[in-house]
Length: 276
Picture 1 (cartoon, rainbow, N blue to C red):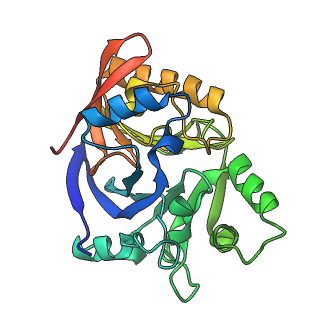
Picture 2 (cartoon, rainbow, N blue to C red; picture 1 turned 30 degrees about the horizontal axis):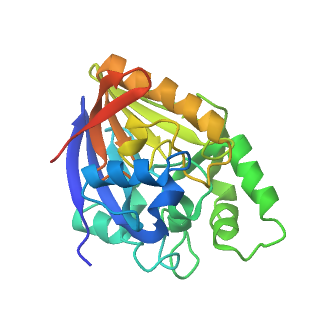
C-alpha cells in the first residue's frame, strides 16, 4: 500500500501529515449515536456514503519546530490492524529518521494512537524521544489493563515508562506546543496546539471522527466514554477554532485531516478542508 503524506506550515513550523492507514471495520451507525436511520442515511448521502462500514484514515502529524521534532500519536503499529502501520514507511519516504524525533505526544490510550510506540520486535520505535501523556489518562489505562499485561495497549504504554513525562491538563510541553484537556472520547482525552508566527494549529484528535460531527455535535460515537462531555468539548473547541480562524487537524478526518471551520448556525459548523 502506498503511504499518503501531505506538507503544511504553521507559522515557522514545518509539518507533514502521514496516513498510518485505513480502518474499515466499524459500521457507520456506530459513529453517530443520536441520529435516526433516516437522518443518517440522508446526511451520509451528501458525502456520497451509504450506512455500511465507514473507511476512515488514521492521520499522524509530524511537526518540525526547529528546536523540537514532534510526533502526535504513533498509530496502530506493525501488528494492530491489517490496514494500518504505515507510519514508519511514511517517515522514511519523507527522509525523517525515527531517531530524530524528540517528542512523542500521546492523546489517549486507544490502540490506533499508541500501538506504534513499539516495533515488531518489541523495541521502542522512537528511542530518543521524550514521550508525553496526560497523567490521569496514562494511569487509567495501566490500571484498567493491569490484569491483561500482554495486551497491545498495555505493552505499548508500559514500554515507555522510562521515557515518559506525565503532564497535567493544559500543560505547556515546550514553548509553542501545549496540551489542551479535551475529555469525553476517553475520560482524559487530550488535544494539542502548535503556535508560531501568529498562526495556530489545533490538533483535535478524536474529538471528531467525521465531518458530520462538526455539523451535528450531538451525534457521538458509541464508544465515547462520556458522550455528554464529548458534546461540551466539541462546542468549546469548535467555537475556539472558528473564532480564531485557526487551522485544525482531526486524526480520522478525510486525508490530510486539515482544514478550517465555518459557522453555519448555533452548534453547527462546516469543515473547509485543506489540501483538496
